[in-house]
Image 1 (cartoon, rainbow, N blue to C red):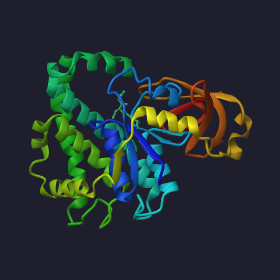
Image 2: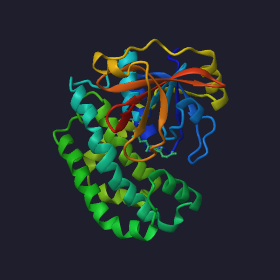
Image 3: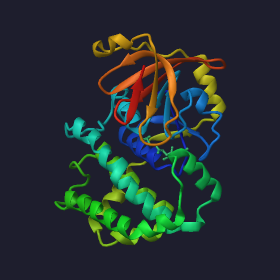
Image 4: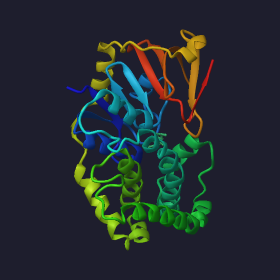
Length: 302
Ligand SMILES: N[C@@H](CCC(=O)N[C@@H](CS)C(=O)NCC(=O)O)C(=O)O
């Protein structure tokens, strides 16, 4: 038993990144479906307010953000590495491209293309999430530039694959593939018309098929109630604060995302590393929980 519970939903691109990594490592896991829009009453008690998807739960330990989730999968579980070519630093840094510039181009192409076919409730929710008005006309106007950006970035994937390698790093798949793949998967799923942008990139299309064939490991359905019961019945694992953070150890701190979905999480700093911070919180229904958040892209304040 891996004990992995992934709070996700089927159409979530960042969840697809993690699902591919679960596939690469051949892990079994519990898929806990959460709503696509707020409220998320069976998620936020675990996270302390963080609403984004995906979130990984292992017992009473809660991991925010796909970047930290995949890092934790690699730390905990054997099996094929997510960094098969010894480039863990660069492969993780790649998310600063794929989760930002590439993702933004994909989002604009998708939602600008869908225009007024987007559900008004979804629009309202994502306006609250981003703190920005979701203006379909402005999105539509931005589509040609975003298409050009998407195409030019996909050309880099094509260039990487040009020597006939199976995956972007070589013959074995890893995080680098998942980071790129989920963006094209999102385009194909949410706005298939835009796949014409890369229809002539045969090597990219063949690579996408290979990544798809990896699958998602062995998922089984777990209800949100079961996930909450698991948290209630579990104790967080012991954590350790890094020397550099000693001054904050045992103090109440807050963490929030720097980009969007900035809901602050408050807790006692019980763990840290150069890559993450861990906050202990007590939920009246669930007991003690430790929420782990990445450093990159998140602000920590005392
Ligand atoms: N940096 C975050 C981004 C997560 C993100 O934007 N997730 C989207 C869904 S794929 C989201 O949470 N949207 C709002 C929601 O689902 O409530 C990560 O890598 O996990």
